[in-house]
Amino acid sequence: MSADSIVAVNGSDRTWTRHRYILAFGAYGWTRLMVWANSLDDALEEAGDWIEEHAPGLFCDEQVREAYEEALTEGKSEEEAQEEAEVDTTSVCSGNHYLLSWEWMILAEDPSRAQVLELMGRVA
Image (cartoon, rainbow, N blue to C red; front, side, top):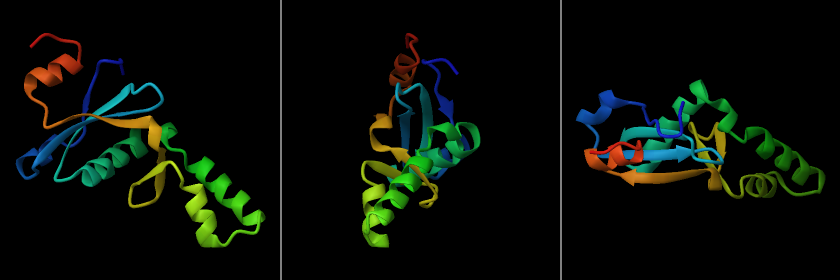
């Protein structure tokens, strides 16, 4: 996948959803997904499902698990440990996976065709 490509994740949902988001993932934002959804939360869930299948290395699940276990060994309660472990992460896939919060961003919400082409490095 090139840095200018955008993957359409769930184009068949565009007929019944209100928004289209272009989201970027990873330290450099090279994984860019176009997702149709009724809200940003729903868009992140759809994106998370795609990431789970196509780019699972973007998840930081192991870091969260290690931080949780470390907090428990420090004597924190399970609730405190979970809270500490999840700091600066975004939960996706119904809470089954985590993304580092600084490794994803919204590139566009309801972009025009011209905006999409510009994000892809093309002239409209």
